[in-house]
Image (cartoon, rainbow, N blue to C red; front, side, top):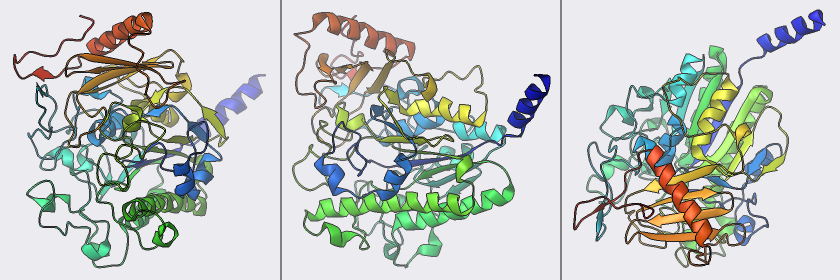
Amino acid sequence: MLIQLIIVSASLAQTPQPNIVIFLVDDLGWQDTSVPFHSETTPFNERYNTPNLEKLAASATKYTNAYSAGPVCTPSRTSLLTGQSPARSHITYWTLYKDTDTSKNHPTLSPPKWDLDALQPGEITLPSLLQDAGYHTMHVGKAHLGAVDSLGGDPTNLGFDVNVAGHGAGGPGSFYGTHRFMATREKMDFDNHQIWDVPGLEKYHDQDIFLSEALAIEACNEIDKAVKIGKPFFLHFAPYAVHAPLMPNPKYIEKYKDIDAREAAYATMIESADAALGSVLNKLDELGIEENTIVIFTSDNGGLSAHARGGEPHTHNAPLRSGKGSAYEGGIRVPLVVQDLGKKSSVNTSNVITHDLFPTIMKYAGASIPADHVIDGVSLDSIHEQRVIGWHQPHQWGAPGPGIEPFTAVRQGKWKLIFFHDGARYELYNLEKDIGETNNLVMEKPLILKKLERLLKEWAKVRNAQPSILKETRNPVLWKAE
């Protein structure tokens, strides 16, 4: 027995730390892949082509009730790196310029004070902790973690050893190398359109190459370098796709010629992102390190549906309601696939959220979370069915649409309660029976409403979630349970 214990202990001691790859797609909706996350295959699953995600999912766990930490990008992206809900970090909206509030005007509400510049040096982050645990940390693609003209705009100030093409802006000027990945219009939403130009890819300027492909080449090059360094690596690969501007990749456009031109462009962008995933998976195979590499695939928020898309707005995530920016499922439910070292196919129906990936990855790495760093995430292997997850966005997003207004929400089990700050309105849904959130049960389920009201208030209080401010009185909106 003693000899056996010695052998097992020696084996564990020699087990190398796994490499970890997270593939974080931008604005990819729950229905935007050929891998079905719903209980049945939908027309959108049949439209889109993601063969590499299909391959990954065949030997991974598919999470069918996975959520982003918020309905827009910066809050979710920073949540992944801190393990904290945006309600706690007060990074509750997307950032751009230093000390500048990007919230759109709401007729009756103002946003509370929030962390305008988002993540900054000195804050505890996933890559910095992985560095301490012996990892080589790499960022490739979209960052949008800190304001453009702040130190946090550069991922190397946040714990990454390497940064390729990441800065403080949330979208690319262009997806075309022939455009130098720069904005070609005189103006975009902001006067300084050059802020959207993708940095660090000058070698691809004037080439006939799509941004996702250029980033995939760079990601694979960084994997090669990491293997030569001899350390385990953490790759945070965040292609700018499928964020606007919607631009077709000519390589894939022919197969979508029979649908709306904007929808065809969107479909090619999805396929381009999937091809980038395939390039990384092939590189892992080529180097013989796939067996000791964990791969995670997800999105930073729900799919865009309020504008820029073809067809009827707010329908592009069906059967989910609405899309990016919204409190409804279309704004926050996302695909999540986790291929751990066991590489077994399974389906998990637990309610999980972006910041759960922080403790999950730390556990994979055998790394410790500092005792004074409070997190809201729970490791994916420790989720219990009655946990409460929540969202808090006390801001007005730019495009109008269903559920696109300041809100706080919680989900426990099958029940979801949304508190809209304007008018202090509640909406209650049974997501098992009504995934499209069409039947508000506030009047029919008073006991469930009372329970969820209490849970929402407790969830917000523990995290010091700051509600919107009433313009007329300059007082904060009160939680209805108060």
